Every structure is written in C-alpha cells, then in structure tokens.
Amino acid sequence: MPFPLSTSMAAVAVAALAGDWDAVSLAMPKGLDYSAVIEPKTGYTLLHLACLHNQRAVVQALLRQPQLDVNATDYTGQSALHVACHYELLDIVEDLLAVPSLSIDLQDKDGYTALHVCMYHSQPTCATRLLAAGANPRLRSTDGETPSAIASALGKDGMLVPSVDAP
Image 1: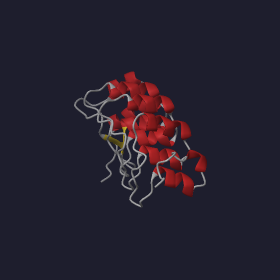
Image 2: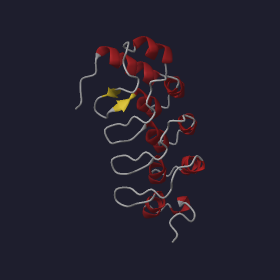
Image 3: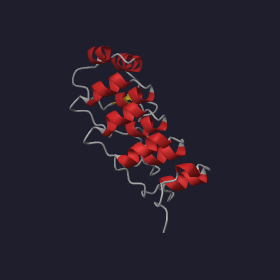
C-alpha cells in the first residue's frame, strides 16, 4: 500500500536525483534499508530512481552498500536492471551486471525479463550485452512471448536472437 514520503526520505530522493551521494548518505535515516521503497506511487527504491535519472555515481555508491538488494522490485515487479535496460543506460547496466547477486533473468509481473524490455524498447546494444552476460533468450512472458517474439511482433526483426526461436 502506498505511504506518504517522510521529509527525510524526500530529502534522500532529491539528493539521489541530483546525483549527490554525500547528501544521500547524510539525509538517509539511520537504520533504514537502502532497498526500501522511496517513491510511493511506483514502489521505486533509491536504486530504481538513480537508474531512471541516469545518476551513475549514486548507482555505484548504492551497489557498494552491503545490505542493498540489487534485485528489489517496484510494484510492477521490475528491478533496477529493467529500468536501466528500458533506457539503454549501458554504463549502469554494466555496473549492475558486475554484482554477483544480480538475477539477470528476473521476471516482472508480466513475465518480462530485462531482455524482453530491451526488445520491446529497441535497445539492441543492451540486449547484446545481456546475452553476453548469460541472459536466457528462451524465457517466456506470461503471454508466452520470448524476447525475439516481441521484437518480431513490433516489426523489429533486426533484433531477433539468431536460432533461439527456431525449431
């Protein structure tokens, strides 16, 4: 259930959006989980917001926090990797892929992985990077679509993953 954003958490969000890790650290209430929801309408965490606003320095600082859950999801089940792939933020994608606990094939509520998101939003470079990192191109969404099927349905045949959907 959405909750009002406290003054201290609003300060944290503003600092994160500005890319100011020092201000994030100072404004962060003691004992608060860095993976906690900070944007009540979407369920975004600090990591989601930092990715959404391409604040790489904040992303990198958050990834150094031992208690951070890199796989935390918003209300739609999407992780920070989904967000970074949506906008093809390649440096941030690389930072996320470097975290050993990252679930590269995490599926959102519709069964979409980050690779599905890349195909849907025509992000071929990001898709190639995910595949090189071991993303599973055969996973199907809740509607039964593979990433290549999404690309094909949207007329983006140039993004098809070779031999994945072949019998």
